[in-house]
Structure formats: C-alpha cells, structure tokens
Image (cartoon, rainbow, N blue to C red; front, side):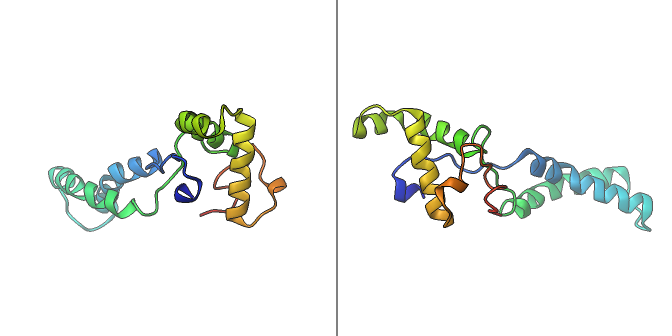
Length: 134
C-alpha cells in the first residue's frame, strides 16, 4: 500500500505481549520441567539456559508477532498518524487538507484493498480485528 499511495505509513511493531513471552517463556518452561518433570535442572542451569534461549525465542516469534503502532489501530487513528507523518507532502501536492479528507481517502484505500464497500470501513473500524486481517 505504501508504494501505491506514495505516503509514509507507520510500520508494524513487535507487541509487548510477545516480548514478555519471549523473555520469560523459556524460564517458565525450564522451571516447570524442573518442578513437574524428571529432569534435574539446577537454578543456575535454568538461568543460563533461559538466557541462551531468549534470542531464539524472539527470533521464532518475529514472523507471527506484528501489530500496528499505538494510536493507529482504527481507520480514524491511522488517518491521523498518516496525516501527521505526511502533512508537508500532502499540503505541497494538494494544498492543505483537512483530516476528514485524508480519513476518507484512507478508508477508500482500505476498502479497495480489502474488496469491501467504503460504508463498511468507518473511522472506528479496528485494524486488523474488524477487517479479519490475520
């Protein structure tokens, strides 16, 4: 969409829940293996293994853990972020634009990409939940 619109769009971010899972998941799993399993792991070995497994855990979750940045989880919020990032370029090319005009253009772009009617994409439409993008 970035190439088609010519606008600087916000990039996807690594969500906090995935980072917490990657940081603490290995330690929790190893601790459970020590407590409930028959694997004799010392506290020191759990700490060392947890530390060594954090980077692979983050790398393993990177393709699956993507989210829109804060403030751009609805079409209206995304329009505000896009307008803020591209106001100089939009104003130079088209004269100053109101937020409502940019919001309408963004709704139209989303509706076209998702093969939907523009009426189905409101300023309060949550991305990706309401558009079933997963």
